[in-house]
Length: 115
Figure 1: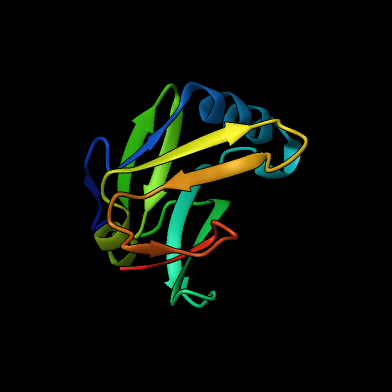
Figure 2: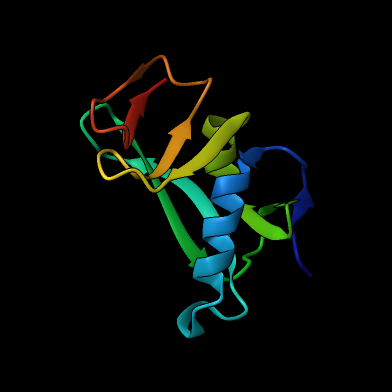
C-alpha cells in the first residue's frame, strides 16, 4: 500500500522551468520518470537543494504543474513549501534557480540555504 499524498503548489514551476523539465523528460534515460525536488544536509549554508528525475516512492508528496509531475519527500516538504523553481538560458547565471520563502539566508552559489 502506498503512503503518498497530493499537495498542490508545494513546489511551483515557472513556464520556463516547465518547458526545460519537459525537454529533459523527453530524453530516453528519463522516460517514465518524474521531476523530484529535494533538500539534504550540506552546502555552505547547512542545507542544499537537489533536483533529479526519479521514480515515485512511498511517502512522496505529489504535485503537477503544466503537465510536469513533481515529487517531494516528506523531509524536504518542510523546507520547500512555497518554493518556486525557474529556469534561465542566460550565458551568465543560467540554469535552474530556486526561490525559497523559507530560507532565512542563502549562499552566493544559490544552491544552499539556512532556515
